Length: 171
Image (cartoon, rainbow, N blue to C red):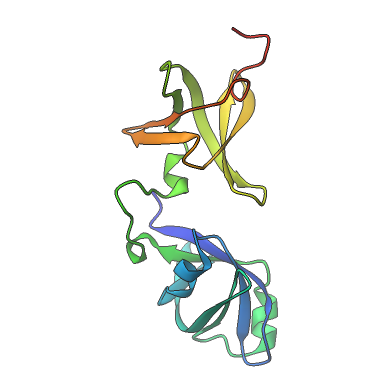
């Protein structure tokens, strides 16, 4: 389990004094803007940067970080990932980090059928998708409550609609 979770990507500079526009990868941009420290991964280490200022603007976060004071520094980071410590987030009982379900098996809530392991998480714009390997074929499950029933031990219990997980020819 990684101590640091990807929380944002540097989209562009904002002004000339080191401000940056961040693409939010948290549940909400407000969650990202509330962080006191973010981390840049350099090699195998995570370098902390204090968040000096952060605000939400049109689903993006405008932020200024310690030690990043020029437009040139921000532009050199364009596309870079920012990370947050797990400890900086408080989760409710039914919340989880998407990264933690990778490797777990997706199992049907109604039938108990084991579809296979969750290989990765993708985001195609609307919501996060769990990519499940079903008979060596990738199937995508929207990571929304309508499809994700619960998580227990190493199992993600899902409620798929007909045809989502199996080929129409399978019965």
